[in-house]
Image 1: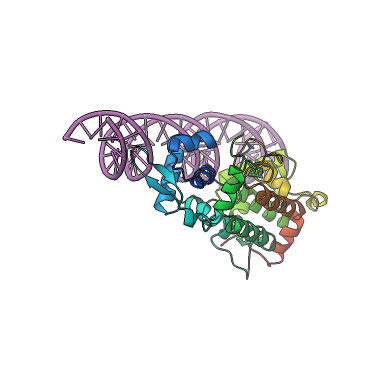
Image 2 (image 1 turned 90 degrees about the vertical axis):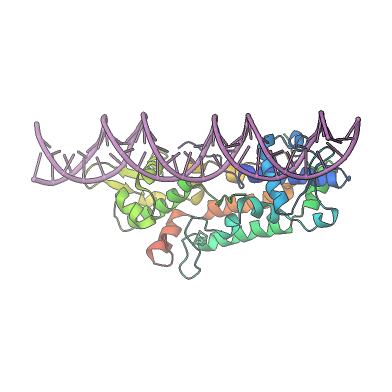
Length: 151
Length: 151
DNA sequence: TTTATTTAAGATAAATTTGTCTTAAATAAA
DNA sequence: TTTATTTAAGACAAATTTATCTTAAATAAA
Ligand code: SF4
Ligand code: SF4
């Protein structure tokens, strides 16, 4: 079987998460950033990333200004409230933690799939992790040099 | 953003898992099953599923016999040893629990991505869940009617 | 007002995954 | 031995995801 190199999130979501974290880290310094600067710091395809960040602008997670001296930023007062689950849900939807691990139409605790008891915990843990991880916290780690987005 | 309906595993992996569970449930009854019977019971595309099960045959997880009265089965003595992690690894590889949640080349605890401490736990939990879930146990649940593979 | 810069939007293309179809090989029964 | 049945293998096609390219709209400075 040709390996699939399956990851937790889609590429779109990966780029979206990294972009948000970088934008947030710069917003902390009162800097708006252009998409070119973003992709330089997260090593992602520019046009594709622009489209994803654009979607997050529509969702009111990121703010944008067009024209010279424009760019993307995240509202200071909003930053502490935005969590990973907002990003992931905006891009990949909620199926990874709400949908069926085996792709059944819906999950029914009465007669679940054989994985039921095993799966529910992993999904719930993933959801609570995403739910409790704020963009602020991630951006702090990046800004302080404790973490990196490129390798 | 056009939602991606991302699931934990690929379609190939989903079909593979369901097929294995059904085949195992029938092997417990000393029955070999043809691919047509398998897909009827798991609601998956026949040719695609056949290819995936074929890959598992190559990996020595499933046994097969060609010709009339042939079909697929799982060795009785092997069944208790095969776990979900074998199936997932054979089809999707190990990237979902070993790879980087944000798609970085490799995970370095010295300077990890900002999600590091959050991610490692979820991945480890998923891995240990897959590792500790045997095909035997899943097939038992299906055979006893406690669980279902279709909906 | 004009020009340069930047995001917004959407068409198009490439890559990957999912799915089908055809032919070959193996096996068992007649 | 011949025929029917089944898995094996690989070519091909469709659908989805990823990525690029082009044009429009907004904004600010000159
Ligand atoms: S617990 Fe089982 S039936 Fe329910 S969604 Fe998860 S895999 Fe599907
Ligand atoms: S912990 Fe962070 S750096 Fe390490 S693999 Fe996971 S996402 Fe990547």
